[in-house]
Length: 86
Image (cartoon, rainbow, N blue to C red; front, top):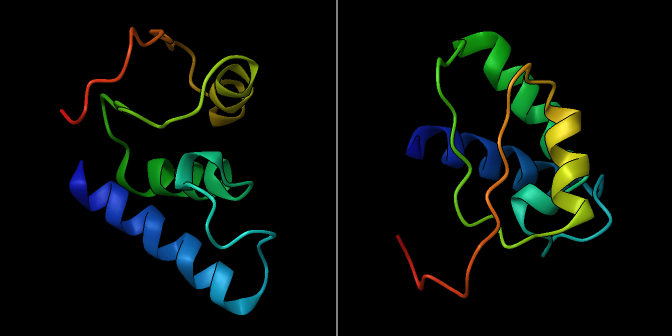
């Protein structure tokens, strides 16, 4: 899982350095390029289970991101407070 996070984060930082992104400080899961990079990763590595933990986004934005990721089955669990790390 860490390799997925590192890969996506590095690709987003690379795009930001090129000036292709609106906000270089945007969190990876909240970034407009995240669904595209995530799909590319899934097509290449074909993971069986994927978990996105503590993306620090919520509500309708989470539902839009889940829809863009294109999984047949997905589940969104609402946070209760802040876990302060996993």
